[in-house]
Amino acid sequence: MLLLLPKYPLGNYEDYLETVMNKAQSANGEVIILGDLKAKAQEWGSPQTDARGRILCDWIATLNMVVQNDGDTPTCVRPNGESYIDITLTTQGAARKITQWKVLEEETCSDHRHIMFTIKEGVSGE
Image (cartoon, rainbow, N blue to C red; front, side, top):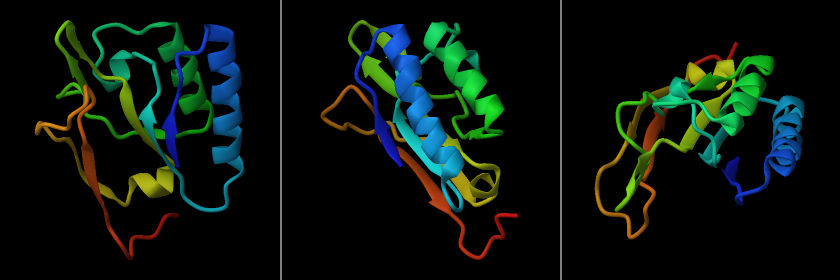
């Protein structure tokens, strides 16, 4: 599931995130959610945690999901700064299949950098 969130006001952000997370929770099988989640948290490399980050962290904990970001490389680089707002979340089973997660530092014609990872086949999700 790829997720690109518009810059919702905080209440709308929480409602939209709840819809997405409920879909993830009801999915049959392993889930990978990635995209610009418009949330900053120390858990994925941001220097500070903002309100959206706290909301997202609560959902991650509630659903027992795993943040794949290592926080070493910013995922978005602009002339006025950098951020870590492109996030990869997985269910526990999918987390066991993810290897070599990294942010590519090559030019993308966007402020956002490409994220690459490998999904190992034949690894039990349970």
